[in-house]
Amino acid sequence: MTDKSNYGLETLAIHTGCGPDPSTGARTIPIHQTTAFVFEDAEHGADLFALRKAGFVYSRLTNPTVGALEEKLAVLEGGSAATCAASGHAAQLLVLSALMSPGDHVVNSCKLYGGSVNQFAKIFPDMFGWESTSFNPQNAAEAKAAITPKTKAIFVESLSNPEGVVADIEGLAKVANEAGIPLIVDNTMATPYLCKPLEHGAHIVTYSTTKFLSGHGNAMGGAVVDGGHFNWLAHAEKFPRLAKPNDNYNGIIFAETFGPMALAIHNHAVGLRDLGMNQQPFNAYLTFIGMETLSLRMQKHCDNAQAVAEYLERHDKIAWVSYAGLTSSAHHANAKKYMKGHGGAVFTFGMKGGYKACTTMVKDLKLFSHLANIGDTRSLIIHPASTTHSQLDSEGRARAGAGDDVLRVSIGIETIEDLIADLERVLKTV
Image (cartoon, rainbow, N blue to C red):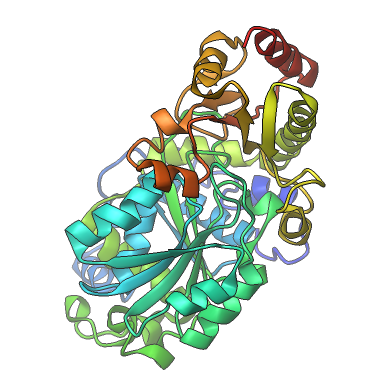
């Protein structure tokens, strides 16, 4: 596809990144399961290593199958380019490694996946010297107050895991622009079907492609989408890796040489080269194929989740339901603004029976698999306090919306009557 401006999301999800294979005529993307690529001659090899020409050198840096997925992601998000990584956590490390140095600071949402909370609060400061301050993602003023001269980014989830809080992306983008720093939005839970953060002012989008993009629970991966509109050169002192001469590549300035793709090229040429968190071709292939049905799956996920949330909200054994798609939700206004009125497929609810009732639910449900993942075609359930958020203390779990009475569900695309019947059967016993 050459002109993508007139096509809808469904068409782009199917056709972007892959036409018929020129050598065989194969219609689907090939899996380029190779470590390295032959150079045409000595000059060609030198040009590739010096970044004078685009091409394939070594699969840790670039790979045709992974590159096709990167193209699809960039187009669907409306970005300039993308870089795939081994996981969502790897993508977060990749993007921050381009922006931050020891002693620098990031302002991050307090409503994040538990593993991300641990990354920002413990691993990043202990291993890299990156400090952080958390804030309410619906309160842009709180984010602004947390910014220091050392702050290099604001990081939020568009739709938080597990609580389903919808961030005020436009308000946070304004704060980021005023401070001369990028707003990074993890769009894993929403996907471009529900939300395109770049259209609301975000500068960078990250993903765990493991989740809804892949969609079948069979492929690990992450991604960073470069929005292409942050002016790195205007803030060269803050972002020297992108806006000052780079000794790795004969003094080139990534922001000058590569313009709107500066971050994406740096993520490949420096990040993947030196940190090595590349996505594997087979995982990229599975995700690429999974994304072709993204629109169909996400709509069914949302429809089913809405029905389950409404059912639980009415049940006398449920204390509360946190789902932005409910009109009773405090997050519903932002869901209408940023998520097409949907609350996604993942949400939490509280059991009146507390911890014991939660453990009974995860043990006795038949159609809900008890495991630590989201975004699968099948419905999933987990007790965050004892699993994904167990590394936090009780105060931290409560702040993240993962108290002892909380269950998180990721609603799949099964027949909705079957899911509700499964819940009803177990709720009678708790």
